[in-house]
Image (cartoon, rainbow, N blue to C red):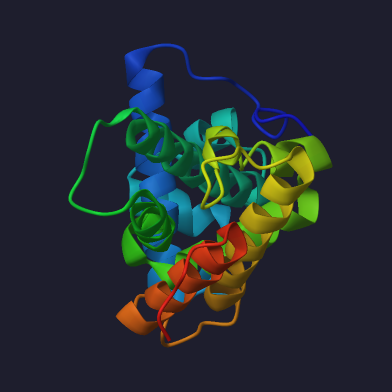
Length: 198
């Protein structure tokens, strides 16, 4: 399924893009406040302050809104990853900064995130899911400075992403904790051959 397949109209003008953003933000607020049970197109339109006809111009059903939410966050995380890769030096090590970027997606609104991610996983095609791990895979090097093979990069990125996704989907109370972050850093560095402290 392509990125815009679920949309009826692709917004090209700034006013249309603004309307879509208002609808997506309203959807996120509703999901966070009420969960999926209180989520429907009428409630989203009302919360966004748009007519149901306007909403349907861009989103044919609630599933399309949910997948658009997940895709928007995926794009934001990818953009943040690209920014991290292009930086000269930062306050945080790259691996730790990447983990924090993923944890902070959806601005910490985990209830909305859980529902949107579940919708995307149920309907995305494999190529789209693979695209969620773009440039970062190419940046992986082991403790001796050697680039990882394609398979090793796949294993490392999916292991990290899998743990993060499970924490989101299982509503783990430690998702944003320093302990969880430290364990993920330890996992990654251990795999890359760095000496890590317990």
